[in-house]
Image 1 (cartoon, rainbow, N blue to C red):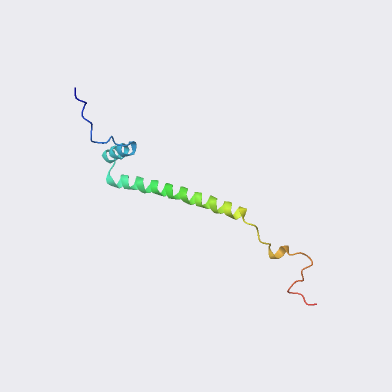
Image 2 (cartoon, one colour):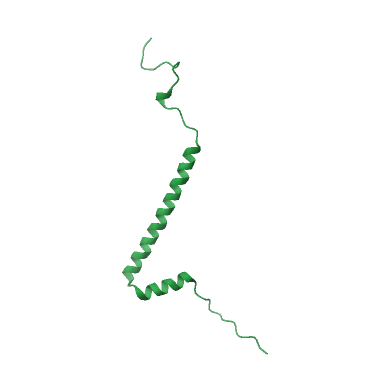
Length: 81
């Protein structure tokens, strides 16, 4: 008894199947516009993630004293004795 032949072609992924349906239903311009829009969404998410990370780093960094918060015993550079 012989084993059944193995199928050499891969089953398409869900994404590949969606793109195939998309190409049948939409014209090329609409497809390009949709992909561009999705790329923009992903890029916006990446920038938002980068902003959050930068904010965390800034929040953890020790803050430098402001010129207006010098101790009272420090002489001012603008007054003369």
